[in-house]
Amino acid sequence: MNIIPIILSGGSGSRLWPQSRSLYPKQFLPLTSERSMLQETVQRLNGLSNVSAPLVIANEEHRFLVAEQFRQINTSFDKIILEPEGRNTAPAVALAALKAISTGEDPLLLVLAADHSIKSTVEFHKIIEQAREAALEKKLVTFGIVPTHAETGYGYIKSATKPNDSESPASPVEEFVEKPDLETAEEYLLSGDYFWNSGMFMFKASQYLDELGKYRPDILTACQQAMSGQAHDLDFIRPEKTAFLSCPSESIDYAVMEKTSDAVVVPLDAGWSDVGSWSSLWAISDKDDAGNSVHGDVLLHDTKSTYVRSESKLIATIGVKDLVISESDDAILVAHKDRVQDVKKIVEQLNLSQRPEARQHRKIYRPWGAYDSIDEGERFQVKRITVKPGAKLSLQKHYHRAEHWIVVKGTALVTIGEKQVLLTENQSTYIPIGEIHRLENPGQFDLELIEVQSGSYLGEDDIVRLDDNYGRS
Image (cartoon, rainbow, N blue to C red; front, side, top):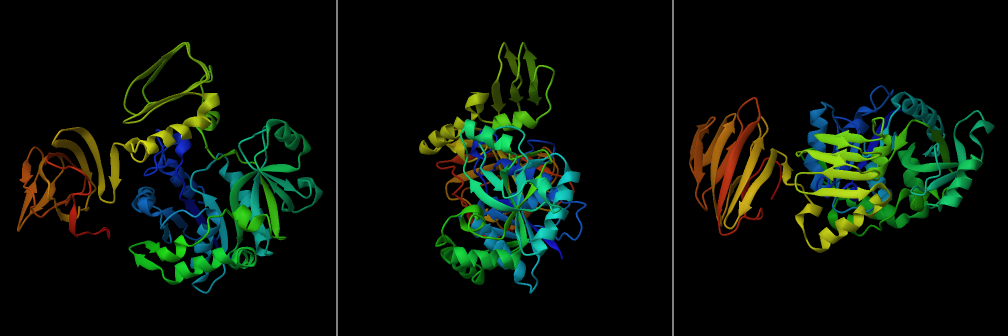
């Protein structure tokens, strides 16, 4: 029986600010390798037998990021289901299960988070094959991480039997427990009966829907109504918004796994981390003899047990230890490793102040490429725009700004009113206020240009789209 990977990619990753933002969260960042965490999750499936193309559950605002990251690693996906608004994991997986059985089949679903790190792919594959057997017997499998220390930041799963008590690695779940205090976590570790709750699962699509209907029929009904009214847009599935927004927000654990009598846990010891904080990222990163992990342009002197990440500027440290220092294009974080959980409080302050640093980076990604806001002031803004080969921006106009475009690399096909002009490096053009225009890259390489905007209002909402290849209004 085929396995359909269900990749949950709706998280915001606010504990990894300033790298992670709500419009570009951690699953899209290359934090543990040169590939993003989503790409690592997808490529980790290579080599598993009878595995279909993944089905991705994503936030509406991330739809083109997901598609682009699959394109970059030359990997296909089935569809991307776009949640109008996050409703936690139980509804997300219900949408995927309903999509999976809509073809008349009843596949196994392998539910994975897009932002986890697993060091041993070989061991991961081995455990998946073991879990497959239990799932085919209509068990709802959860993967329990073999604990390496007394961790207070994870929920735990208690196994009804010790792993060596039976030939099968799958053991009935006795209970799910919340994040413990340190003393309790130490007791769990010594007992050998408890595993960290990974949030990864395997089960038949119909079995999950049956159990969800038994224990949370309100969630199942809302998801069924949302999928019955679904709309298709390019590679995206859009569940009917009103029906889905009526769905309660609930995790799989609370909705099904804690209630069902068919839950089993399979131990996984493969170097797993949820990369839930800067300190956990430091813990799984390569380090020098002083315990430092550095990324980018960094100089260290008399520095110990510190994580330093630079994206654009030189960072130098002197006489410090146990710190996290992370620099992005528009913000710098300095925190003690013992206090990194409080990064969320900084994000909350940014949101309360409605500062853009909480939501987006200076560089903004679009389905056609990206733009980087280089400079701005009263009545002007300067951007560096990159357009992918063969891509085009929407046919549009602005009521409050004019634009100057200067090509610095590649070739641009520019529509202005009824005319088209081909521009190459060092050539420029001007688009007056209110003029209909479009920018395309007809070449085989990235197009880069400098855009200078001038006018009374320079907000991104001053765009009237008349035609768009990507379904944006």
